[in-house]
Image 1 (cartoon, rainbow, N blue to C red):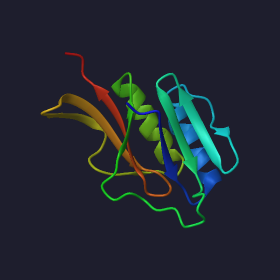
Image 2 (tube, helix red, strand yellow):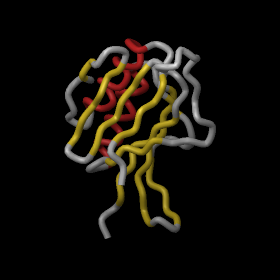
Image 3 (cartoon, one colour):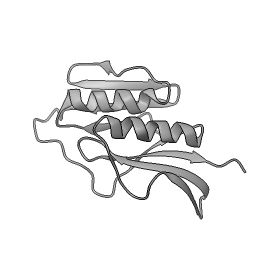
Amino acid sequence: MFSHVMVGVKDLEASRKFYDAVLGALGMGPGMANGSRYFYRSPTGSFGITTPINGEPASVGNGSTIGFAMSSPEQADAFHAAGVAHGGVTCEDPPGWREGPAGKLYLAYLRDPDGHKICALHRAPK
């Protein structure tokens, strides 16, 4: 459904270090520079960070969450730990299993250095 997700950031290099670390935990290489942007590409889509091209300050979407698919709870924990080690802040509940209408999920939430909420999500096999 999606081709890419892009978020605006205030400090491009601090955000690059953060996303290089958390996405590196998924086996992705460092962001590829393209002017005032970095892109992280996978077979299923792209994620990008940018300083806003309109010159206005970057801001966070209140109520927005960007979810990254994980292959295991251990990968979600590595993603989360890399984020905390590189300027991210834990939010929501601590990483762990949750059960609800969507089934059994392992979730690990972070706020990136700009305050964007991101989530590592692993779905339990049925």
